[in-house]
Image (cartoon, rainbow, N blue to C red; front, side, top):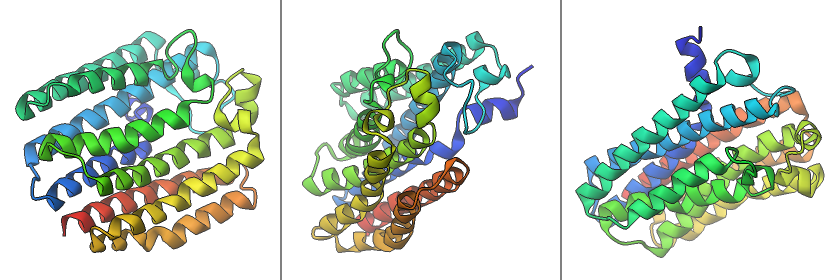
Length: 289
């Protein structure tokens, strides 16, 4: 029988900071234009987290039934290890999608931003088809692009728009910084699994580019957000507090550059999670001040 701790682990809580950061920055941007609204912010948070959990369960199910996760180096998955039946994990994904849809409908109804239903539907489709179709785009090197779009501009600017009814240039730049850290998190996994993914026919961007160039891409993804923060600071100077992550980001980039191996990838994963979360929260505070 699948335990509660198994289901919690299957939701991959260490990745949920990407949703938290995005909604925090979007809400901070709304506060910067004197338009922060608590209830829409809470609903946006619920939508983002539920969608991410749904995607995580969906990936667990799809990769598990394909056999992609059999020789995983990272944390165990529910289906691959037999801790949960594939049908149960699939239902968990659908339930999470349902929660996201209900909260999303409540958000657009409250804010009368009905056109965002289209964006929400696209997000749900993108989350499922990442690995959940006969030809998943996550297996063809588009995973990082999707992560950047949905955990960066879509989540940040969507949160801002439901509260302020407008989008600003500096919020767009800020959303890019948030999205880049999410990309870096995915790259850690894909670089770590480059050999097993290639053997399983999973053509991630790390497999397509090769490990050396993928490592360079990671280095760019963890350092460019600092540049984004500096650009945003021209409109909101307090955002410079988020640049405290510059040194940790450089250390992460250096660790990847010197050739972090599979075991030490776990350290990089935890490091980018902490840096990405701090970056998002401090940028949110900087925008709100």
